[in-house]
Length: 133
Picture 1 (cartoon, rainbow, N blue to C red):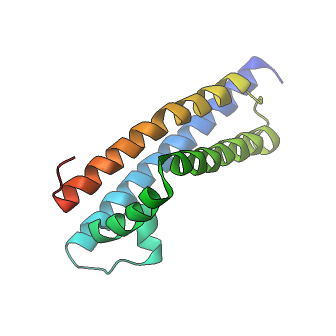
Picture 2: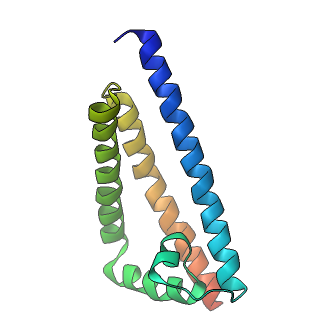
């Protein structure tokens, strides 16, 4: 495959990802608004996009009981699986190169970001319970 054709595929894929990201963010904000304004009740579908404070506290307490290491391992494995499946999909279906540096970068970002996410969730948890830590 020539470089021009590969570039066209990558630009097309990038456009699809940007559109998906915009739709996802709008959906999150819409569910947050609808749930907070009591226009809809929280359901399994809406929890994919937005978790209200009570559900967050319940879920986060479960993660905290299992411990930080288990949270990091489970999240890393889950995220890594999604990255790998997406990469294989792009390689097989779209025909783009199987780009190991990009996958390595995503996995490294995942590894760095998960402890940060834990700390952010801990802070949110303590703020919701009004507990000083």
